[in-house]
Length: 229
Image (cartoon, rainbow, N blue to C red; front, side, top):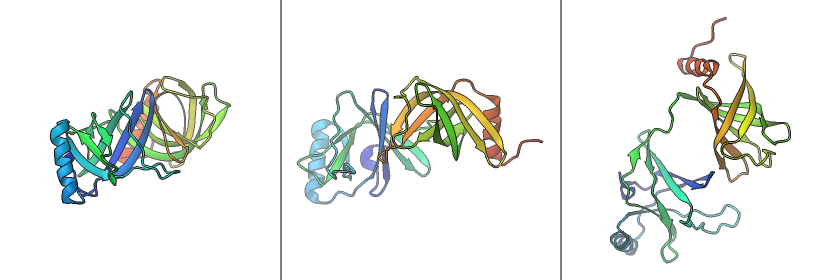
């Protein structure tokens, strides 16, 4: 599926990657507003040998000024979920032409269905604590999800994470599941981090070892079972 096959109103997630840092932005596909815009897009498609679709203008939440998307040393990936299937475009440009009222999503790539997860994963949203390497003791976190091989947690704004980045070890992540009363103390290392506009940071982590306990917990939750007494 090419980007110009997307329909007005479809939600778009743009993943901005610069080195080990990532930010995720959400927007939506717009309808072409006029014949002039349609002709301009057609001309640009021929000139740049790419496909183009207008998306809702993405602005800075504080200044309300349209965000620019420089291309040097930055990677943009786009995800769109259609009929519960996520599609991914890995080579994307985002531009504005002559102060267009929208951003233009540009890619010559044929987006493909993708599955980003290797292990079965469950959402949790449970409170917990984490001790970050070089951080100031245990910090409150939210355990967003868990699989047999990884865990995602979210810190509060201004949390002292010790400038944690990809490859750094989290000494222990502790949380208790209220349904089963199981308490987990897991060690992991950071694979990626995503900074949200509200100041919170999501850390996607890989467990230092694939624990049988975590795997069984995930599969029991998926099956709706309770652990044996």
